[in-house]
Length: 200
Image (tube, rainbow, N blue to C red):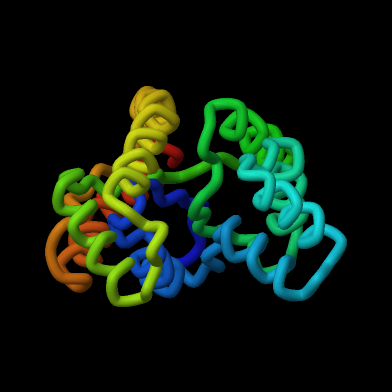
């Protein structure tokens, strides 16, 4: 199957990046990570990169208006014409509305949202180990748990919203990379095939 408009969400450390690339490859769509776009612009010293770096250095979140602009621009590129996989956006209900507005002119909408579920304690342990291996001294347990809490607060309304729309595919994010990838594939196939049937 090729082409689908997808989003992957899940707590920090649940393995979204790894699974995103696998899903994107399977459906022949680009994996679009707002974090990667920000990082490459910062590294390249672009006007956007300078702006984003100043915001991050102040310890603030990149505002919705700027993030929306970046995603809107990325979705107009040729490789995203038949679908995409978003990772890291939308994070808020306001951003979901902005994405809806971007897709509306094409009579398009998200086809499925993959929710990677993972036990908080397991994820925290995984991130602490990663911090140790990569020498990230500021990734303490308190900092990691705070990030998990922020994720939960921000994402709960999104999970409810996508569930209401009938496009949420919940997947157990714990296990080997292959096991999780298989679960995602089964869940997405069921969701996308039911959509195809409904739209006939």
